[in-house]
Image (tube, rainbow, N blue to C red; front, side, top):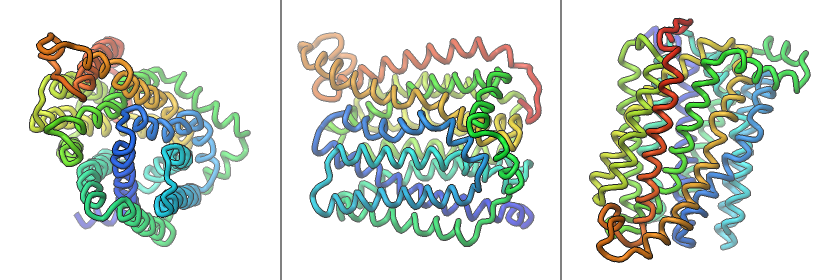
Length: 433
């Protein structure tokens, strides 16, 4: 244990403080969702918050990776964190002057999304640089653990602060956690890699960006996994857009129940993360990736759609999210052990563009289907109709229909890619693929 702590000292400092800052940011995001829904009652407007965050992420990721591979990772992370904090301060000022409007939130989320776009590849590569290879799966499990803990805690803390102290208290908490993470990174974390960055500057910026796409083209296994997860992300992001519209308007729903249901997703991923950290590596990582997604998408949406009690909604979240850390950890090891370190920033950024471009599409689709298609459809249904019997009545029943269709879509995607990925089933590569 002493050797483990010694080997991972820098990682532990960076991981713990950045996770704390992410918790503060997630609390602000959740509280803003509640604030906006109180004023609009629209699933689509809530979805637009996330769309504005992901749009720059998708459009600029390829170039962000080239930038990351060419420049100092620590400076990139510090500048991006500082600019993101400025956006949070802007929200606070607008809120205190009673000037905050949805369009302000969309713009500031877009700026935050751009900062995250530039920071993430630098952060991913930094984690590789400060982590010995023998700890890749363990540290991946730890990162998944912290993400799970954030998922559990942020709706609980955000709802409590929002209800009892208001939106401003949530934002102040966010700023305090940012300060802790910023100072830790500035004063306590040293990230190597200057020689690599200097060499990469000999390439033109465009050559650096294009080389990431070329790498994926030459490695079809990695590309296929990314495209599979892009389709999974479409379903998952549409689910995220639908969930508030499904829970908040129900008689047995509301803000507290939404926080509880969201926390169950975190509890499940927390449990899965602990298991990933403790269990030995699987014999076939590719099989683990698609089977976990088949289990996740094939259960959660149907349990949510057909049942109308919070305990079963929580059960759906638990079953749906428990396999996710297994997928994340195995994908992380596949990427880290297959992609050369000097290529990781640009390849990760190309991965981000290809794997996550479906998220804003899914968010928009989920919100649009609820607001414009299925809520009006269910409102027009007569009492006792088949749709009423299956999905309930009143506001929120249209969201239930949408969840059912997302479940069917998710199963279809997993079964198709299962056949595509099976040809890699016995493939042996570095990292025990």
